[in-house]
Image (cartoon, rainbow, N blue to C red; front, side, top):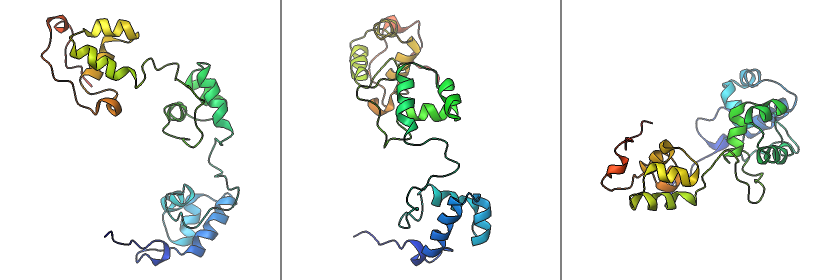
Length: 197
């Protein structure tokens, strides 16, 4: 049987109460900074940040319609970003348009952030040449002894990309990070089987 973990003010080390968190939400709505709010309650600004992101004190809801003043994107922006990605517009240009960094756009395109706003049906990142469906086929071709060069030409990717897949370095979500086991072929002798990470 799993142990019951106390949360909120019932946790023995908690410095905050539910009413404190409600007040914190009000201060966040008023635009106060995390350190300012933290000082008032005797906690670090990172604690306030965690509350604002819903990482802690989730059982004390944010006010209806709350938008983090530091958050630059909204759920309404994401479909437009998906459309721009589909049109092949560069991450940097999209980032400038919305006032966010290139990594932010990259994270959206890879489904790491804003997952609750889904990509359009059939969306494929125009910069990504491979899909998860291609990887088992590539591994099967490698198991049959097809060279990196030949596979790269079929999928329009570099030999290094095929090598990284073959060695379990790339597409780990599909390969499980396990390189296929087979003796190296003479055709691969010109290309190192161990591509540096």
